[in-house]
Length: 117
Image 1 (cartoon, rainbow, N blue to C red):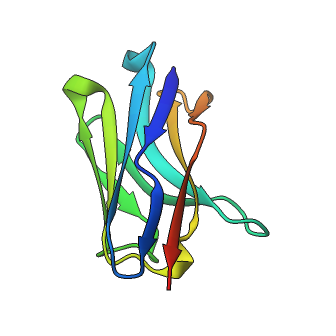
Image 2: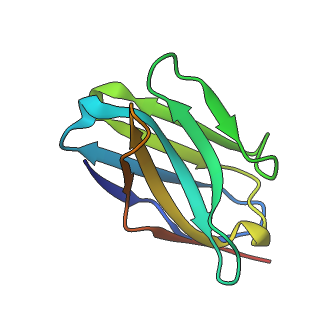
């Protein structure tokens, strides 16, 4: 499975961005996809996740009410709509997928999101 992200950039606080992640390859094996973010000096944290079957989602407390994860099954693509962005949202955002066994994890190359105050 290959994951390709797009949509990062620079935005002012209070603004919005939408990230996209397109999966290719053995997409039938994917159980869940999501977004993680990493800031230097901190651990990589889960931002949002969506399960393939049923579409159940979960979010980090810090983004609830501001970020929305969604998917387009026909395009094997997930999206992260980020509204009301804050400077503390600044990070490299990584797309992630795992297979049904939970043993295989796939990562995108990362996309930088910078929120200026």
